[in-house]
Image (cartoon, rainbow, N blue to C red; front, side):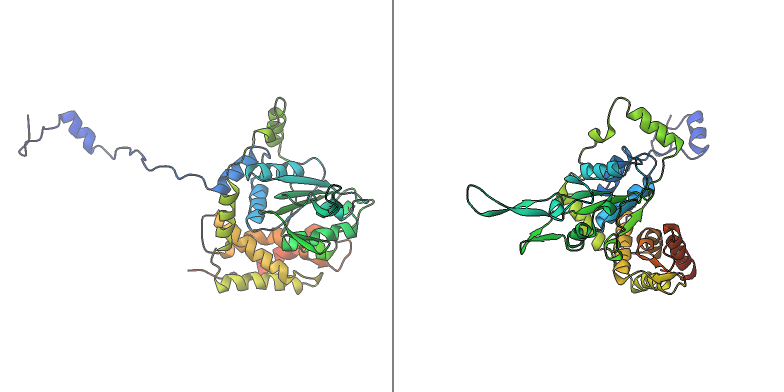
Length: 341
C-alpha cells in the first residue's frame, strides 16, 4: 500500500509512534579534546586527592609565570603536589632542603676549576629546573633567601659576572611550617613580594584520605604520572594566558582593590604595585583556564584572596595570616566591581 506520492504508507502503529512525542536524539557531536590545562589538572588530581581548587590555583600561577608559597604543617602533600606538576608538564624538578648552613652557591651554582683545561666552568645549581621546591625556606639564612630573588624576579642567575638564563617554564614552590618556628628566619617583605600566591593545602577530608591510603598500599600514584603535554604546547598555553584581553575598567578594579588594602586602619603596608601586577596576570591565566580570551571582574575576585594577603604588613606584629585575608575580604566587599556588557 502506498500514498499519493508513491511512498510506502506507514502502518497504523508506526504512525501513532511517530506523533506520540519527541524521539530521543543521539548526540553525534564529537567530544572536544581536553586542553593542556585540563589534562594537567587531571594528572595532578590523581596524586593529590580532594584538592581541586588548590591544584587549579597552582596551575594558574604556573601559567602566569609566578611562584607559590605553601605554608602548612608537614605531611599534607606539598612536595608531592610540586612533583606531580613537574611530571605532568614533562619538566624537571629539583628539591632544596633549606637549612641554616645552606649557602647561596648551593642554590644558584658556582664556577669550578676544570682540572684538564685549567679554566673555570660554571656548575649549575638546583635552581636550574622547571619546578624548584624550596622546602622550609624560612630555615635558610637571609643571605641564602636573597639568592632566590634574582631567580624568581628575572628568570636568570648571575655568577662571577656572567648571566645564565633559567629554563622555561620556571616555578618556585617554597614551603614553610607555621608551627615549628624555632631556629627560623622570617621571610622579609621583599622576599614574600616575589611570590604570586600563598596557599594552604590543609588536611584532606575523610574520603580523600581513605582513597590515598588505599591507593598507596600497593603502588605510588606519582610513579604513574606521565607528561600530558610538551614543553612547546605548555609554553603556548602561557603565551595564550598572557594574551588575554583586559578592559581598562577591570584593570582599574584590580588597582582599587590593592589601594583599598593600603587604606585599611590595621595595615601598615598595603599591597604593592607588584602585587597589583601579579593579581592581573593571575586573573588572566584564570580567564584562559575558563576558556575565555577576555578578563572578567570575577577572575580578579577569584584570585585576590590568594594573591594579595601575603603582601600585607599588619600593624600588629602578632597578627595572623587570616587577619590579612580578612582585610582583602573587606576590600572585595567594599569595592564595586564594574559591570561588563
